Amino acid sequence: MARAIPLEAEDRANWLRSAPFIAFHFVPLLALWTGVTWRAAAFGVAAYIVRMFFITAGYHRYFSHRSFKAPRAVQALLAFGGTTAVQKGPLWWAANHRAHHRFSDTDQDIHSPLKGFWHSHIGWIMSDRHTATDFNAVKDLARFPELRFLERFDWIGGIAVAAASFVVAGWSGLVVGFFLSTVALWHGTFTVNSLAHVMGRRRYATTDTSRNSVIVALITGGEGWHNNHHHYPVSARQGFFWWEIDPTWYVLRAMAALHLVRDLRVPPAEVRSASLVRTGCLDVGMVRAHWTRAAAAVASSRVTLGHSVSGGVATVTDAISGTRAGLEAKLAAERETLEAGVASSLSAVDSYARLLRQGRRSA
Ligand SMILES: [Zn+2]
Ligand SMILES: [Zn+2]
Image 1: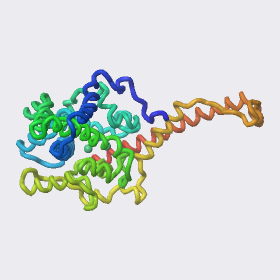
Image 2 (image 1 turned 90 degrees about the vertical axis):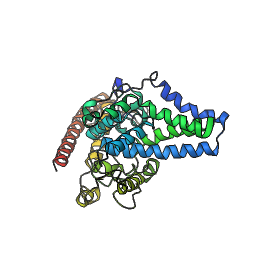
Image 3 (image 1 turned 45 degrees about the vertical axis):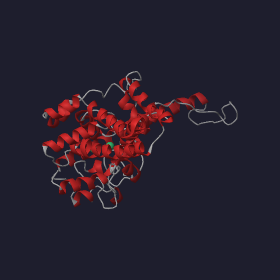
């Protein structure tokens, strides 16, 4: 099936530059030689959970969305903790994530599944297009020299975890506690960009394809309530209701009680009950995704009558065309009409989404 949004040349994976990233995935196989000790496994699980917290609470909810306030020392700790996840620096991460929210599921979205599931999950990271940090998008963060330092030396955190894993559990610790745990952490994080836009339910009629999924929430420590999140991105709490499990939020609450962070933003009641799909709000995000897919399918199609029922001899007689060639010409004309119709529907739903976003920003 054709991609709903085609990839451009620079979106393609640069396999050579990505070689270390790919090779990293195979290092855990060394466990066949080192074995897997209990100590190494425990270190790996703990490293996954702690680092996931730094990604979700730090890189995502704090640096990308400023959903709570933190003293400068805690801010630096959140940034350092984020670098231990080996997902580059806080500025690069936040700049790309802010771009995702600005252009969700349009052709300018850096990792929309409409560009293909593989691209949304991992392909965009392997392309050359998103390697640089857009400092203009993170001016509020770039003014801190300690954050710029961690951005520049973003490998320090990863090396620190690797060293700790070796000290705690030896070679098995390094292979399982660091390498395997990091690969799991990457793909756990990536599910928010891929799975959370294709799997789960939509409560809010957002202009994107985001969904709420308990599975993704369990993998990511609470980031699976992605439709909630796109509905109200500035919230430090992503599970909007008590039954929506959100461990990151529980830890943030505890940190606020200890005065480590403050001013945690939460969705007001009127936000939680606005734009509900079940009350009949036009689900513009899904409508747009369907029209985008339809447009791509029509554009990449060819006109053909297919085989005729009597084995090659045209048996259809048509009052206007009469012949098979005539029918084909008519079909081609209908396809043109269809293409124009789909394009105009897509542009209408695009304008609708734009107006809606404008309205929400000004609200
Ligand atoms: Zn998203
Ligand atoms: Zn976000």
